[in-house]
Image (cartoon, rainbow, N blue to C red; front, side, top):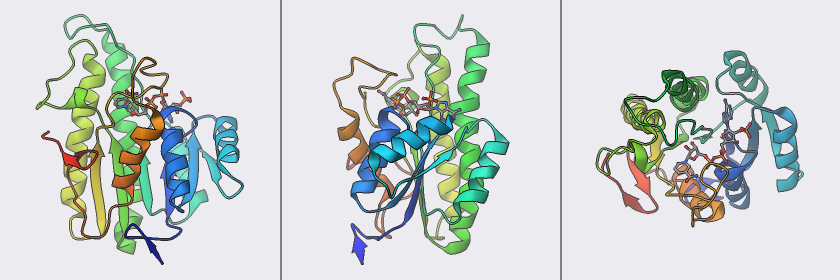
Length: 232
Ligand SMILES: NC(=O)c1ccc[n+]([C@@H]2O[C@H](COP(=O)([O-])OP(=O)(O)OC[C@H]3O[C@@H](n4cnc5c(N)ncnc54)[C@H](OP(=O)(O)O)[C@@H]3O)[C@@H](O)[C@H]2O)c1
């Protein structure tokens, strides 16, 4: 049986799914009948969020900056079909490119870029071997040259530009394998990161879940905002 072009009970792993947009994406994919694994860097947070979604939802501690944590997750979870790289940090809001403490830039890149890249390296090769996969990077308009990078959060913005670059490279590398790799701009979403945003996590999660459940003839290597393609 297929749902939205995707076979029932594909296994979906979402990073940073204990709160905010990641939690809403986990809930939306659960509603779409995928087998959801809620991951979070804190094991208790992951377990609590999974239990709130339903008894069939698994949880897994996963700190994307910790290679050992990622290796343990791969060893525990078995086959993973859908990977949503959602975990991210915004540490340098209100700074500027000439004076931002570079320590903040480094920490941002370690999570948003290198952490997401690490998780992709851990899970995507097996998707390629099995001939099917969906990978979504939760990106941002702040990283888009077509919009203009956000100079008052320079580390965050370039981390998302880099994530967009990673998206295109992984899409090129996996082209024709059955694995589709795309970035999503969720817009401004009301989470701890942007508390006064108008868009609810549940609304934005639909866009991310759509990219995570693309049909086999869906796009790869694109930057999506809802059903529109954005210029990088
Ligand atoms: N909110 C917006 O307007 C907006 C706009 C564009 C893009 N985004 C992107 O959307 C994604 C989700 O953000 P959000 O708005 O939901 O923010 P959020 O509420 O601050 O959630 C961030 C999530 O990332 C997790 N995380 C941070 N570092 C981690 C690590 N090393 N390993 C694993 N998980 C880690 C956090 O876990 P802890 O609870 O343990 O800290 C939390 O679950 C991010 O990539 C963000 O850049 C957000």
